[in-house]
Length: 140
Image (cartoon, helix red, strand yellow):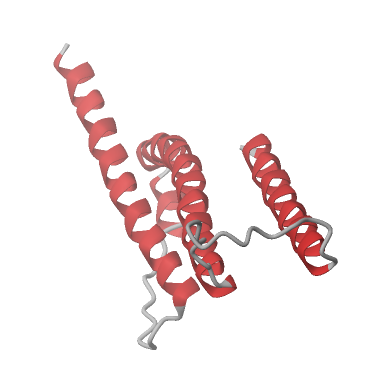
């Protein structure tokens, strides 16, 4: 996962460098601009590029988080079941109380909430799969 993050950062820095170099070429008129009216280039505003990169980054980060969380919950579920069976007092000590925030979330908070919902679904699926495996072992 660390390698994926490093590759993502290098790609972002490289893309920014290419855009900066192209802007420098255009600003200093180092290259000739095409004058042909047949070839019209659609202009993209910086805001459109920023918005697309923001959503792309959100999906990439969510994918990496979900990948890590899936493996974390597999390990945590197995550990929790072991602790619950062997030491019930320790299990009761580590139970969490839910908290709710009623304010209208910003873009980042909405992305975090979306991730939490997806994480909860993965957690439930892992829990069901783990319980099914335990039930199969008990039947044998």
